Image (cartoon, rainbow, N blue to C red; front, side, top):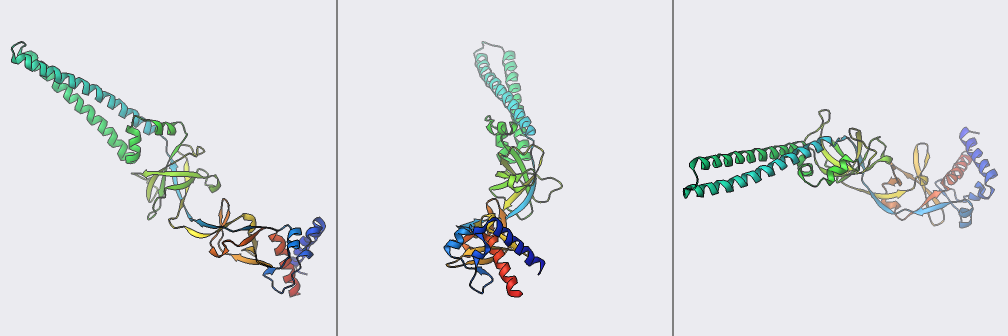
Length: 325
């Protein structure tokens, strides 16, 4: 007796002792087929077989991308610098407007001989000084805005120069995390990706595209993009792994993990037909959160075994070994 057959018989004996009502003898297959098992409703019930109907689904394959969580401190520094410069600009503008009014008044008084030329020139000098101060503060504000746009792009620049600090506050309070993700050359950004700090997809959360980043790390090749995520497990300066979905979706079905069985490195599942269970080979099952995605539209609306498939496989292997003896 081969080791394989002895193992299968041992499994059979275990089931016979522990679950006599689910005995493998209940799975007698009158046919000569080795890729299917024939069972009536009573035998299916006592064998504990459960099934589901496979529904049509789409899946986008994913590409690993990498990046880093951004420390928002520099954004806040830019914001406060811009606000200070804007405040000074408003003050200078008010002073200039008053100087303009005073200068116009002194001009009229001088024309009527009420004031001296010296006082008129003094007021005009003050007006010119306030005008120069206004222009200087305006240039300072514009320089800070240009710096923000150059380093962070137009979208985040608007966050910096806006008086509404909702976006920046969500970053500084760690309610949201800003990411810079670098995509390999030739890849288009997706509106949403998954991102995780530990590289485990099951722990990843959605991140939303903000804009293209004006710069990338020297060690990275490709174009970088800013994304924002609510995954507070990601902290500033952490390295981040992302999962970029491909543009075109594949069509197939999603099955639970328990529906898939393995034999000699090949994946199989059992499809319930009218009077039998047919073992169907599965190529390249894709593990996902819900189970597996199977790129096989022919399985749509088919009845798939989710519990009891190992029992069916054991009976089939015993029958196969018996036929070879």
